[in-house]
Image (cartoon, rainbow, N blue to C red; front, top):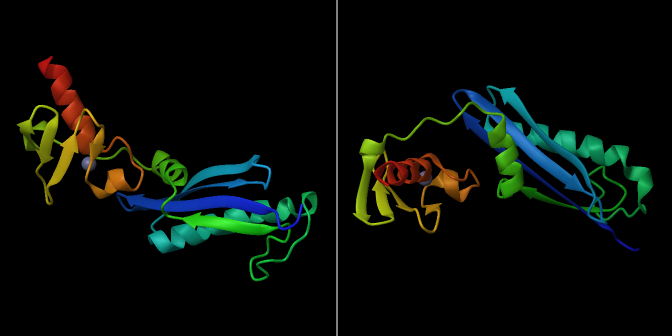
Length: 163
Ligand SMILES: [Zn+2]
């Protein structure tokens, strides 16, 4: 099995003065060997991602004898194979990071404007579009894996209350 590829992802989120990373690592055969989320306090997202990468690499090092040794990426000390690492955009890693942060603020239903049934504008410091039947929102939190976001939750709750 030449050039086995390990896959992993690390993402960071921050809220309320605290950052957190989430990440996972799979062997070339797809076995999940690491899945973690940790609050790291007052750090930048970049620092939190670096902390997550360090944790991932420690796990990779611990497994280095269990797979063929292929040094395709010498500067990364995961010598049991090539590592494909996804940063920031991985939804599972982002959800892990999100899971250890304090609950996001609620979005006030009064900020919702219904354009047509199932389609809203959530008015705030920025305006976002919410489609409840599709279950999507145009905000960054939703885009980067925090689903449902506070806007979608508020719109779904408003519809539930109406009937
Ligand atoms: Zn949203």
